[in-house]
Image (cartoon, rainbow, N blue to C red; front, side):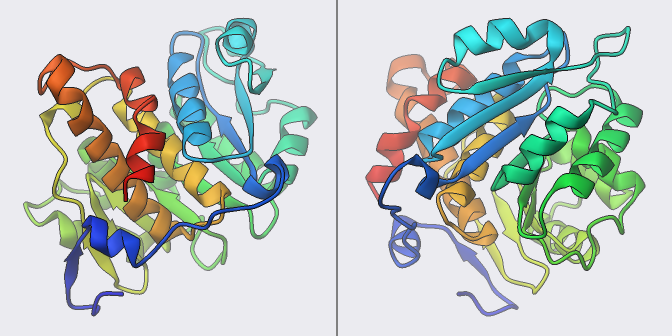
Length: 289
């Protein structure tokens, strides 16, 4: 672990010294990830996050998305249980999705919320429902509109004691901070971690509420592509599901996300690969540490 005044660069050696758990037994020993998101127009975000969770080692995957997309998702991801959620007339996931989702949340080990959601008010209502249904040790990974919802209620998770990871991009960080991010993203990540009482993974800058900080330095421009953040949040959720702690999962996910992109460069160039092409690289990238 780094000194709390120090930011430690994430390297393969750092990760080897902080090895991921290797569960034994059946799929139940690798945990259940539930991904909640996906409006009528953005179901692919849930698909990317969910498959990334499986590639990272999750044992059971469940997807909850707008009901108009559920049949297509169940065909695209046959490994997952897929649940359709009620929609607003505009195609957003409704904030009161009924009892079925609450039951799934209560049994999940990790709930990833946000990929593909597109209505801030509905997301705020949905986030409260998820928190009410989740067990005290259910881990949360918040991304995209879930982070926007959290920015309106910064004390929502403070003191909860549950494992939480926030995965903002720079726009989402601006909402969470209430200002533009500084050039020093290490400091911004620390500020967010303290303010929201959660582990924060901000563009490869990871911080904990206790002041620990790491930086992933091998990410490249190619990761700035549509859907890449959904892959990263799902990868992180999958690592927590298999037994990693929130900070450990955030560090490993940042590194594996970046290096999976590097592995695609010889085939597609620095900026030519797609987010879905990262998915197949994840298992090999993790195995090479």
